[in-house]
Amino acid sequence: MSSTRMSIAAVGLALLPLIQAQQPATSDPGNLPLTTWKCSTAGGCVAQDTSVVLDWGYRWIHTVGGDQSCTTSSGVNTTLCPDEATCAKNCVIEAANYTSAGVTASGGTLTLNQYVQSNGAYSNASPRLYLLGSDGDYVMMQLLGGELSFDVDMSTLPCGENGALYLSEMSATGGRNEYNTGGAKYGSGYCDAQCPVQTWKNGTLNTSNQGYCCNEMDILEANSMANSYTPHPCSATDCDKGGCGFNPYAQGLPNYWAPGGTVDTSKPFTITTQFITNDGTKTGTLTEIRRQYIQNGKVIANAKSSSGLDSITQSWCESSDSSAATFGGLTTMGQALGRGMVLIFSIWNDNSGFMNWLDSGSSGPCSSTAGNPANILAQNPTTHVVFSNIRWGDIGSTFTNPGGSSSSSSSITSKVTSTTTTKATSTTTTKTTTTKATTTTAAGATQTHWGQCGGQGWTGPTACASGTTCQTQNPWYSQCL
Ligand SMILES: *[C@@H]1O[C@H](CO)[C@@H](O)[C@H](O)[C@H]1NC(C)=O
Ligand SMILES: *[C@@H]1O[C@H](CO)[C@@H](O)[C@H](O)[C@H]1NC(C)=O
Ligand SMILES: *[C@@H]1O[C@H](CO)[C@@H](O)[C@H](O)[C@H]1NC(C)=O
Ligand SMILES: *[C@@H]1O[C@H](CO)[C@@H](O)[C@H](O)[C@H]1NC(C)=O
Image 1 (cartoon, rainbow, N blue to C red):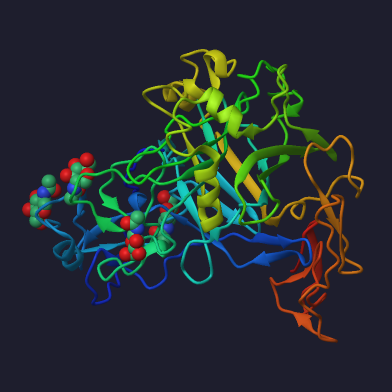
Image 2: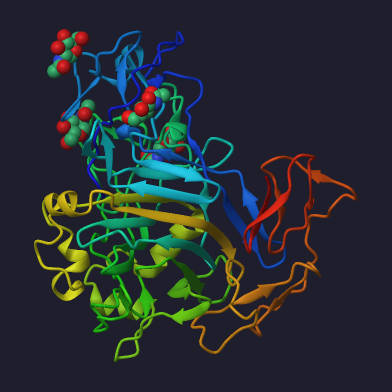
């Protein structure tokens, strides 16, 4: 939802292959590796060879063999880019410079900065990134009947900032085509439920002046003062732009999400979001979106309003959102989650509305002007958000209940996998499975440098190549370092 801007990208890359397009200027897109984990009840969590890619609109697109920009502040230079084919002939797109984009990644940890410092001055970075698979396409995360967990540190996000982790139903290839051969590897194809009108649409030069709408599921839009999670289903041409979000403060619980609150936003914690279907399968109808937190070794059930509301249901959507029925509410959202959606990370603030919809008035404790980006820059220039240990898969497979067994304080279904027996036990009666893990360890197999060597459910090699040792990163992952 942040505005599309050009970054001051690398100027030093002189080698321009003889290709046409707003085609890649370099063969290596230089994206940042970010380990994520795909989990199942039977097999535990397995590290994925994923990376993050900066959005296309933040990159330098310039003339082939030259350094004249093919974009302007309002779109493209229409002399260089009167149409897709001509633009492709005249222009190339650069790999991103993640340092100047305000992004760092290490292992399974991703940090996004609102501002970056260069020559002693701060400038706005506000990066937006997508999760990319090793095949060069976006990871199409299928979460219907499943769940997503991650850890987040938003302690430095003040009023007016939005550290966001969400899903949009972008094309897996980013709209890769003959004129845009990089596609997802260069971050093309963004869409969301606000139907943004952009210079490029699904990887192709936008000549129709139309917005690009797609289903969006906001898992987290938050700062240290307020948060909400919100489904935004779409029809072919329009979307439920408001959505039926769940925000604890708006539910009358001002101390639930706050520094020192029930969920203490001054410290890191784990967020789990579950997409429950009517029949418990991954093909059923989405009926409920549940939420749980884990902090300091304790499960924290989602906030519960005085009327008993503690999750997003179809009836909540229909009572709180007049557009829910028009766009099919949770049913439509569930179909998109079943097809697969792209995971998006961003940090942004808002020059026009100061993010009041998120954290001011009935939504949060911030004053209506506290979120003015000028205030944020003056008072919190180093504001940033850290996302880590991203895990997705079967219900109950992406987190370990503190204490190792289901606890009555847990508001959501959990299963605990055992690494020693490679069996999974379920704490629900309906879905108990006892399945052998599909991977087996060859006797004496050793893992290479950087490879996975342990973690919950891991059945691959546990010995490391000589010169490296197996080091525990978190309960789900140990790595040969
Ligand atoms: C990326 O940007 C940083 C900071 O702006 C700069 O110091 C660095 O040289 C750039 N890297 C490349 C490869 O151009
Ligand atoms: C667009 O590109 C043409 C051809 O290179 C150039 O002469 C012109 O100044 C550019 N216009 C803008 C607005 O940058
Ligand atoms: C986006 O582009 C891809 C590749 O050309 C195409 O397969 C897909 O149908 C397009 N999606 C939309 C919504 O236009
Ligand atoms: C695409 O959309 C923008 C924004 O509305 C518009 O200014 C532009 O004319 C459209 N077409 C191109 C080629 O950028």
